[in-house]
Length: 148
Image (tube, rainbow, N blue to C red; front, side, top):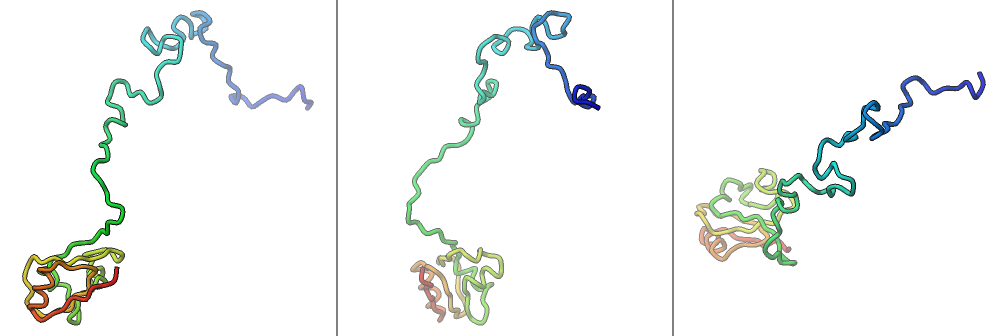
């Protein structure tokens, strides 16, 4: 076999469509562009982000509103009424709450004053409201604030 006898495998090479070269070529007259309309004309056509008259994505997405404080600390709020279920050895800590699946292990906890405290419990939390502190101490318990 010589170089001039080498041919590509059958079907691997396809001829280009010669568009707009007469009816017998199969792509004559409208040259595959349909009939009339913006896309049938010569020139740039439509921009890539055009969605055919449907409300565009950048208008459908809600805008960011409001203000987010830079130094804000996110805390999970728990009421004193819920704490009785999660007491272990007289204590409630973020670790015990995470073990029960109430919070994630890396989240900070704030104790709020809704509900009643019946037993004396030692609560470890990152923050506590004044009413929560009052109710826990009135029941004979204590609050230990974990350093943030």
